[in-house]
Length: 364
Ligand SMILES: C[S@@+](CC[C@H](N)C(=O)[O-])C[C@H]1O[C@@H](n2cnc3c(N)ncnc32)[C@H](O)[C@@H]1O
Image (tube, rainbow, N blue to C red; front, side):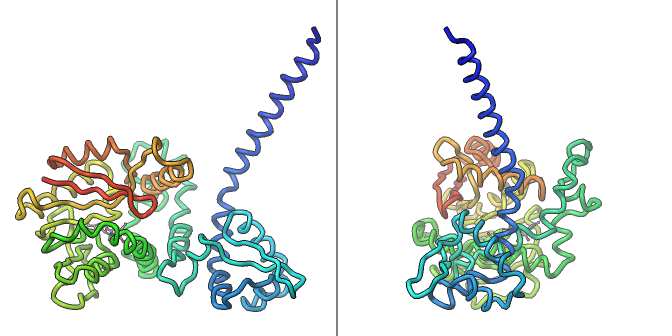
């Protein structure tokens, strides 16, 4: 028996495992490069330029249209090479031209600013320094016994909401990022008309600048929609007629009465104790409708038994964003169970919508 051959195989397996582990680790260390390259290309407006020409553009055409300094054309090629590899662009050969040309793919079409599906403001907001700086304070945050978010630890105790309320540009950026998600909701609304059909009134709690309520109002003009948010958010906003209006207040104190309460992208901002308070106040707000009232929640539900790895990865990333910025969380099905029943609801349904979110209807 040739033992030396066997031991060679073992050591080459070990080496191969080590090399793969190294690649895995490096890939995750440099994940941020792909994110920031996407942001850079979004800010340059590459998707807008390709879209406005209505045909694929070569590197030199792109550089001219984007008014790049000639010394940066090679850099643009390298950014586009990475983003093409990541699925944001496709390269096509145009017969009459020597150079290959770049065309848009479904993910980069989401960066066309003139389209209602535009998600540029999500890229801008999620990768803004105010969302990223705090990660350098993670060690301090992990080792301190303080009930602070990582954001608060890194900013001398100031919460992200306080920061936004002081910085007019940033609150606009944040509200734009939230509103940009509206088109996906518009599509979902077509699939779930039944959710709103028998309602006379709805209050959109934490409804921001009203992007979602405006869509509901367009589809259901008879439905009385109230956008309820912090006074500074709704201060200068006006409804368009009697059935769409804005009210300022604090959802932890009380919520205006309606047949239904909508909580879209709200509960994940808060820990269980505060989410419970919001749900209890929501239940109180719908009490006039007795058993027919309902609370409609749109949020993530983590479910790695039915979601694929990419989708679960996105939901887990979102969970850490919520944890570090707000001490909030994305919840698994069993956590939704606990929260909803503890708030006093007797039953609920959960249906996946909008690609990675879920629609929950909770009944008294
Ligand atoms: C993540 S955003 C969701 C916006 C909107 N629902 C959407 O999906 O586009 C959360 C919203 O909660 C609002 N909010 C935070 N604290 C609040 C409070 N105490 N009372 C009412 N609204 C609040 C914020 O101003 C913000 O607009």
